[in-house]
Image 1 (cartoon, rainbow over the protein chains, first blue to last red):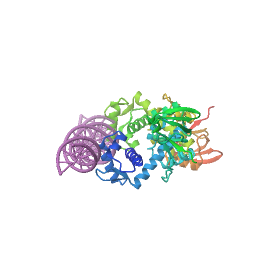
Image 2 (image 1 turned 60 degrees about the vertical axis):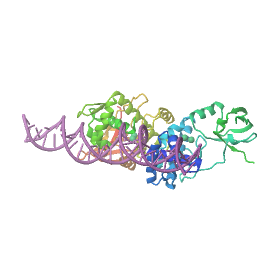
Image 3 (image 1 turned 90 degrees about the vertical axis):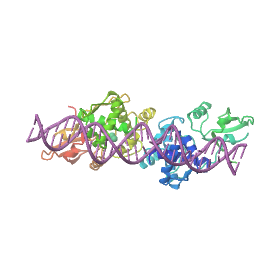
Image 4 (image 1 turned 120 degrees about the vertical axis):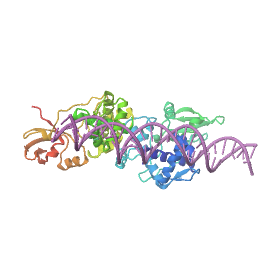
Length: 219
Length: 219
DNA sequence: ATATAATTTTAGTTGTATCTAAATTCATAT
DNA sequence: ATATGAATTTAGATACAACTAAAATTATAT
Ligand SMILES: [Mn+2]
Ligand SMILES: [Mn+2]
Ligand SMILES: [Mn+2]
Ligand SMILES: [Mn+2]
């Protein structure tokens, strides 16, 4: 597996997750900042290797074998993100780009030992679950703030975008993973929200609310 | 800089260290397990980039700019080796191959933070000095055991080969970096040595002695 | 149903890093 | 001084991963 192949697999895996149907050539190209023709070439290669299912013009989906590899890359990526934050004191908006490189280092032993060194974490710095060695992914009940209503309460457990810009914006708002959040008021005109977190009142735009996951309190 | 370019620079740097004259195409090819024609191609590229000095048929040597880059790769390699041993509990014969991959990760910040995390180590697990950020390399007075005579005493401070085979051989002999070594007797017939370390008597072949560095006691 | 537009694939090119085989240059030994 | 062999370079080929431009297919709109 070359880094290029791994990156394609990972992208197809992620795109397949959200839509739950065949992933299109264009969406892969857009996501990876490359051209559709390049994507077609790579898809053919991955298909010949049995890592994806592919029918011309019909999009692509993960095979079992491809899924396993994609999950192992995601696992490595997220473990490295934890390492960078917990051990090297990176900020949560800085870890992704470095992890993009570290995830391609090939060594089973390295990842096992890293996992142990970190105390077998189950979530990365952005609240995303770390797949187990065998490929199991913990699924947490979480909803976007944009899908919540006035009065809903819960815990800030994840972000939808890991872009530097958005994460630094959350830093400015003093919002941290694990914070208890209460929705004071939802403005139907523009879908903006008034929320309370750490005793402070904060206003969030509709766009911001679409990138914040909370775990609603159990009854 | 691509990983390939970095590996060539590093190899040329290391080969230039030992001989102190122009490095030959064949020696690079042998070291990198590649063909001389491939080496010529890469040398041309590095030369055009101003990273090495090169005259056809006359071998190659580092430029100041190339030297700086080579040292930064060596620095990264050795810091990662320390990390793998100190933090992840790898054995000293396992760290090199993984460090070969990690050394190509591009992030100034990562290396600075790793360096701090490790407590600014000055030597790697094999006793080799870690170049400073500015490219300074600590030079330690050390001599090969093979160059010593009966009665010489000193401290085991480095190895000449980092091959798994040799390092595991030292493990079997219970010889560890930092051990005090005394040469009891040098057999002139085959250059083998009788030494004492940790109170134990050990016999070393001439070949083994050529791969062990000690720092001779000051008077 | 057919024209038009969007998506996807194909054909042909480029740059990198490797290789083999052949040509060139250099070192050396008579 | 010249021949021989070793070292090095050149020429031409292959694999990978990208690109542009053009062709093929599918989706959509009248
Ligand atoms: Mn990430
Ligand atoms: Mn993440
Ligand atoms: Mn090493
Ligand atoms: Mn080392």
